[in-house]
Image 1: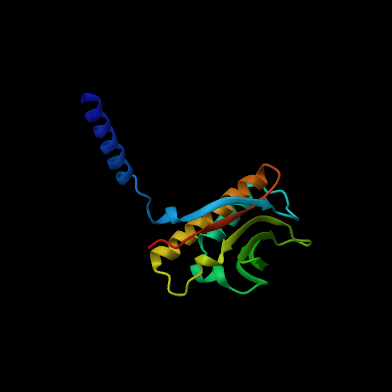
Image 2: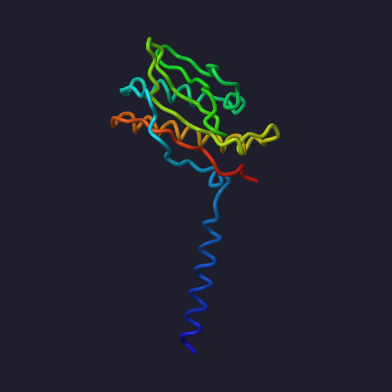
Amino acid sequence: MQSLIKRLIISLLVIMIGFSYAPVAFAQVTVSKGDPLRNSGAVNSKLVKETMGLVEGLKYADLWKSSNTTIAKSTNVRIDVQNKAGTRQNLQAQTNVKPSKSIAGVLIEDTLSNGQATPNQQQAVLNGVTEGFNRSLQDAKNGQAYFYIVGGSLPQ
């Protein structure tokens, strides 16, 4: 009998802990490592800082602009919308020198595009894009940039 009570108490505790650690809205937007970025160039701390400054200034509407559009630009780096990768929006940070080099990339699932997205939903997607660019840039500092895929679903 005591063993049954102990199991019940443990089960209740596990359930209670599960509820206390329920995922927040951001948890529905996921970020995962994709394929290596072709035409990748070396990055230094200056390029990383400049790129992340551009990323932090992006708006949700910028993410869904048409291909071959520059959505943010600074002295040494720009963020371009490239041709779609299947059903994914393709954003790449590139250097402003000729020939330009892609230094980081993020692919965003079309399921996260919604003209009716609430401010919280938009922020969740922007947080995922920021995380994806940050990870891609860190990979580039280590010698090879990768695309990061921002997917999942819009939080409710």
